[in-house]
Image (cartoon, rainbow, N blue to C red; front, side, top):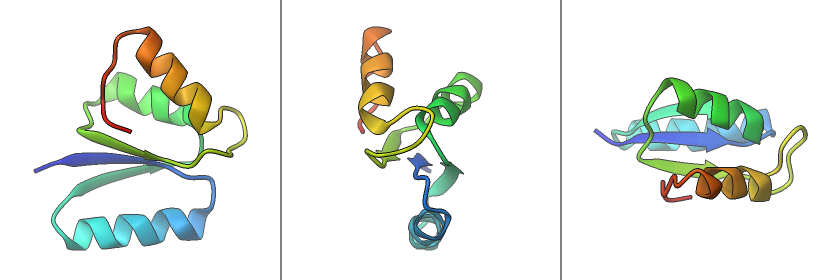
Length: 76
């Protein structure tokens, strides 16, 4: 079963994405910013990340920069 991490600051949109993906058999974790996404990835493995671009604390661009800087090639 694929595990997907959703980084989206709009709670309703994050819940909608989660609902649809869970309905189709994926395991989903939702967070509200890039820093929380990095923290979640420190605790668990994810097959894919769905990320908003404009978020408080850490935006999607910085999230990808930090992932790639440590060699993480998880699809975003």
